[in-house]
Figure (cartoon, rainbow, N blue to C red):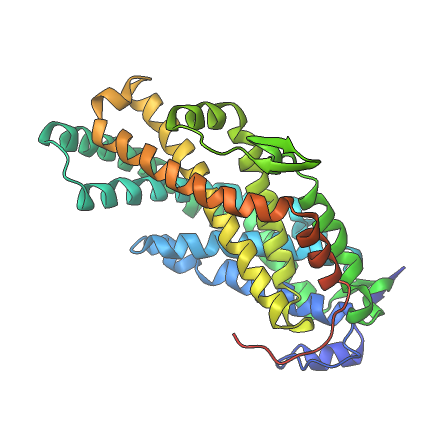
Length: 342
């Protein structure tokens, strides 16, 4: 069953959404989609000007969060084809191809600014940066074409039309406090059951614990074999973070703190993925023996990897604790309206 926007929703969409117990799922969906569509398009001019890589980063983040909004509120909304998540993904991937190269450039530039490398090693990194810049220019040349494309123009028009006359599914009329647990509990279950939590663990007295006393060499082997599981866990953690952030106003301060915990863990896991991308890039550019050509860089990466692994194991231990998992699940089962700090 599909419905058009109600008069109350039409009134709310022109001003800040006021929280109350009767707020519908549709009204919250409208607000989230409106917010992230605006963010996903407001940086277009800045991206094309290409003076600050942050514009591209923010536009990509906006697209990701818009896609998350569609995942969260999918049961409540009725979108045209050009506004579907698959279309958002196509645009985000084009932005991501340039952003990934920006991240590599910024990383190498930062390394040169903080490290005391040999002149030979620094020169090799500068040559790598030069090749990176050429590749980035080639990928960036596709962005003006993207913004002029039928795909992008139809995407923008579809959201503008929907925000003017939103269409909903019948469930959109339900009070949001009644359905938030049903939206979030399956997400937590998928997170808790992810195999990434079991990387480098061992059973002890009926429980699973992270392995201790691992050497740098053993860690490198673990990451080479099971790194993809940690990467996939990071993506799942990002989905949990983004989706739970939509509902912060409907829970207490403890829940708000937990969403920050999701963010911190996602970023920690992201450090392992960033390093994997960096290493893969260097293998393609310099060959498998790149650590011999860039020894100080290889040493820095190994030391950082080991430090980050210790931080990860502390989080891994917490999330493997069944009491912690049950506490999180209970927390999302009791939404209420509270005034929160931002």
